[in-house]
Length: 131
Image (cartoon, rainbow, N blue to C red):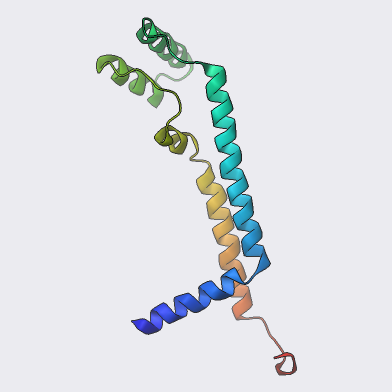
């Protein structure tokens, strides 16, 4: 079993020694931070719900959503909040993760690129004179 961990450590060492890995990590960080900044600024434009009328606002929002998609999950979320007297509080960490599900495709793309690079480097021919 320790041989497996040595192999994994060796692959990680090779992976982190490449410039492309650090560039892709930087791209991923920029995408996540950019999305967080956009969500934060969009949340300030949306505004907060008034304590007296937030239930009516959610009902109107659900009615607007139901016009084009009656099966949207936002309708069920709004109904749950109304029934359980839970006022929406803006963007939370869970809301950020829920809204940012597109980032999984970016992460998958970067993972495929790294995996392809690992496989390509395994079969790269290097002359003995350069070692």
